[in-house]
Image 1 (cartoon, rainbow, N blue to C red):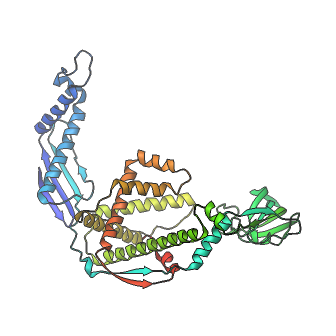
Image 2: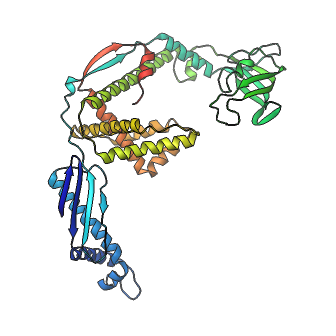
Image 3: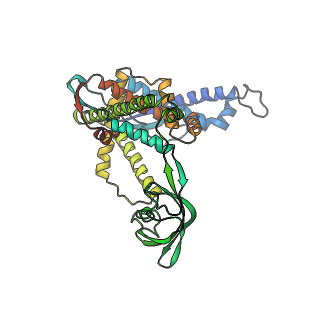
Length: 432
């Protein structure tokens, strides 16, 4: 058991000693269990002398015995103090030798005690947006566009915004053609923004058979450094221009997208938009409550958890810079403040959720995995990833738990409704 302790806020330093005889006795039990199944030339299974097992495996058994003793001492200590550890302790066994008493010290942080939170004294704004029929009309028009057919036009037809131009192009920096700047019979949707700014605008107004130059300047942040910020000239030839012919909005089109009639399709769209409004409003309320909790709840933070969070953020920052070729500076002060906020809110939601019996069901997990998988071209890969990666499942479970805890909290606060334009809902409702 620990013989010395030093406590400062949430940080604990403890030390103790384990007698060599006690460790060896525990190691012998481990070796005896191992010997029941071990195979060794000249001995029947279960009849290998302990002395022989010690010669071969005592170092491993000794280490396991020490580890077990430390864990038992730690658990007894935590139970006695009625505290919970926040992160893996740092272990120091300087001078450790097999056959000698083990003197050790442990440093660790404990979890803080969550103060009482009177949610009924908190008022949250519930933003409500009235459905605009123009959104329904826009959705219907997008459905028409998705079912449109690009028909080839005659040689007199001049390309307009939204048309498809089938073109050859070749790019030059000065008099030299540059790599990757050429293609033949490329189908370009004018106005799509898929080419560098200014290129598509200069195609508009041209007809099939036209040959001309397009002059543009590559953006300063362009991914190819040899082209970034450079002026370029493209030789362009238009082979044909295709115009999108939209189908009529009628019951036949509605049936093609899974609805019985135009009326049913409109009702379906209204339901989807209303659900989107509700989801955005709910996220807004979550964000507002998180801000209140971060500001109003006083909570000491385990420094080890803040350090872990900060290290993860720094690793992500460096990965992002490397992945995208950026050189964004690391703001230690700001990032630490953000890390402290995340740790604080995580502790509040974890503790409050546990106290109030929030649970993550199997159905919750399955739905979350399905929602994520449905966003990918091959959902099977996502299902296989979670089947093989239990750490990812644990992280997902934690995210679901926090969201459910937050939503349960929202059922206890006071609400005041505020009517806002739909744009405000979607502009503000981002996860913080």
